[in-house]
Image (cartoon, rainbow, N blue to C red; front, side, top):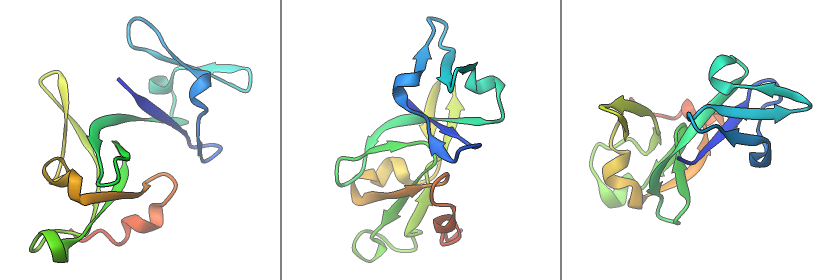
Length: 123
């Protein structure tokens, strides 16, 4: 499974070269000479790749923010949506309508780097 790791302390994504996966699925990271297991630390957030792509073929990750052309593709659909994952019987599934309409949406940021965009989400 592909993923990215956000470092809350430095407000940046961790260099993928410093992240390893053990055979049991545990993520190990080497950040500045210190080793971490992201699931055991409040400092790191792991975002998993959904397997979906937006209209520009950009991979969609958990916590990405998607823009949707509601004038062209739908009625009453929020033009901005946060991608969230939920655990369902051993596999991950998307919450909301992103799964059905991802080919009409565009990744415009993520909740880590662009929290101001979240204020525009229409509930």
